[in-house]
Figure (cartoon, rainbow, N blue to C red):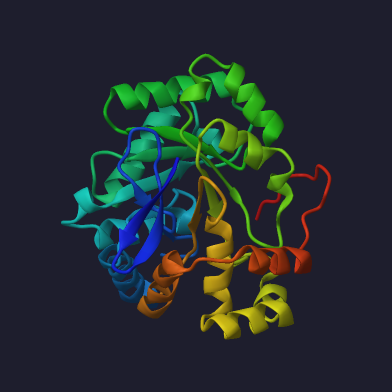
Length: 293
């Protein structure tokens, strides 16, 4: 569900996950954080600045820097846990039984908290979805997580999940989505919107993809950004979150980038501007394999 709330003199787009208060449609990603000790303080400060600016959804994973990103987040939210909507992800081989319980507990320890707001299956592996749903329900009952969801599941996977007992309790699907990667628009995104289930768009600026330079240096995007007095990155974020029930989670390792991301919440794109951007980067027009990085 999407609501528009007043932020100063502008309208800031927000998302409502099942059973939550409204959250800004731009959060903070942490992929590649925690990998270099020299950047630790800067990364912590960036996340704290994001919280100050209202970017209270923070996404991380046990995979990122082998738990290092969770440690950065744990430091950043110390004393501010109640201000944050905290998301982490479990490896697919840890997504059932005692392994899932242990993985979740280790994430909680690194994050210095006793619960996650949202816990996601990072991608689909060999473990049956029934077993993952079962352990997610167990973690909810234990109070270690409040809700659960999935990541990198395509349309057919979601149909299978929906047939699993308890599968419809899934709160979100986190997938790669940006202007140059629009394959989910064929079936996955419309289906999620129909279910009123928010989609979390990772790499909304193609941060980890081969297409980043092509986006940032594209003449159409550069001209439009210049006309609107903003950066191409802000333009791209505004495009992602103009879609119904989509939240973007760009990684920003510096305070300056976090401020830039936050300002994108205030951008309203006209339909002709959206059309111009999408003409430059058209959707596939047919079913394509789900993009992942």
